[in-house]
Structure formats: C-alpha cells, structure tokens
Figure: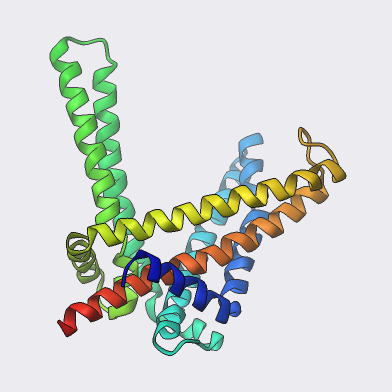
Amino acid sequence: MGPVSAIKKGFELAGKNWGLIVILFLLNFFSGVMGGPLSAVQENVSIGLIFLGALTVIFFLFLSIFIQAGLLGCIKEAIKSGQTKIGNMVALGKKYFLRLLGLTLLIGFIVVLFAVFSGVGLLLRGNGGGIFLKSLGMFISILFGVLAICAAIALFYAPYVLIADDCPIIASMRKSIDFIKRFLGKSLGTGIAVILVVIAASILLAVLLIPLASLTGSLEEPSGLFQFISNILGSGLNAYLGIVGMTAFMSLYMGLTAEKEQS
C-alpha cells in the first residue's frame, strides 16, 4: 500500500458510498449558512451576539466531531467490505464521539501550547532588548514552531488509529507516532497527493465559476444567487474530496499495518 493506491482506494470507495458524501455536504453547507451569527459578532459586539456566536461555534464543533466519528466508522466498514450502511453512522458516531472529542481537544491543546511558546519567542525578538534576548527569542520561536509542526504531523493519524483499532485516546496517539516514524515517506506522500488533488479541483471550480459570476452580477460584487450557487458547489466538492481524503488516509493506515502484521 502506497500513496497512489491509497488515493485510488479513496476515489473508488467515495464513488460507491454517496450517502457519506451527502452527509458531509449537508454539514459543510449548513456551516456556511449558519456563519451569519459569527459575522454579526464582528459587526456588533453586543453580549447577546457574542454569546450566540460562541454557542454556534461550540455546536458545530460537537456536531462536526460526531459526524467525523460516524463517517470514519463507516469508512472503516467500507474498506473492509467495499460498501457501508449509512444507517450505521449514528451508532458509530455515538460509539467513538467522546474519545474522538477528547483526542481532538488534547491534540489541539498540545499544538496550540507549542504555538504560544513560539509566539513568546517572537515577542522577545521584537522587544528592543539586547542581542542576547533577540537571539534567545529567535531560538525559542524556531524551536517551538518546529515542535508544533512535528506534533501536528506525528499525531495526524491518531483519529484514524482510534477508529481503525478501536483504542483509547493515549494509545491512539502513541500508535500514530509509531506509524509516522515507520512510514513517514508514504504518510507524507499521501498527504501531499491529497493536497494537490484538492488544489487542482479548487482551481478548476474557480475557473468554472467565473462565467457564472459575470452572468449573475460582477466579479467585484458577486450577487446573492452566485454566492448561494458557489456555496452549494463548493460544499459538494469539499464533501466529495473530504471522503476521498479520509478514505485514503484510513486505507493507508489499515493497509500498512496489515502488511506489517503479515510480515
């Protein structure tokens, strides 16, 4: 199992499991529609709107993690059998939700903590102090910036491990680090391949939307109709490629760990 075969598997299973794409499309679409309260918070900082914006963020955080848990569980089933029953998604979401939520918060805390220390280093560099403080600030900034990137890469597969192996939070993090150490090249190759596919598809969609923008308004001031249509098309594209990407990463992990066990 390598990057090319993982990507092919992603496209293959995405084409057979459109129900998963529809669910992710609905999440993406309504996330865009419900962005109104957040933009209102930026324009009017009343306590009520701030509270509404915070509730909206928390709601969609919990909802997205629940759906991610259900989707990854269904993708695991699809990899094993070729197809999955969309009706299983709610049960799988309930099964993995709390662990996936805890894992997401823990990984986010670790990465943000390193990023904060990196920011402290930047402050030391720009405080007008002597050469020692500026050198120390540069060192701290680079060190913790690198640590934040390394932590994000090393723990990237933890959600897939948690679902694929049905294991606790800490165990999934340890297994993700071990997987990245063993298969760094294939892991990065798959990630880069997915990113390139997303970039190419996004550019193609943007090119196709230019004539539509001209017909419904102007490029400088897009009409409401254009924004609605572009939201639908963008959400659909993100949903399809999201399932492709998740399936590719899950396939790579399950395929390489199975090969390891057989050898």
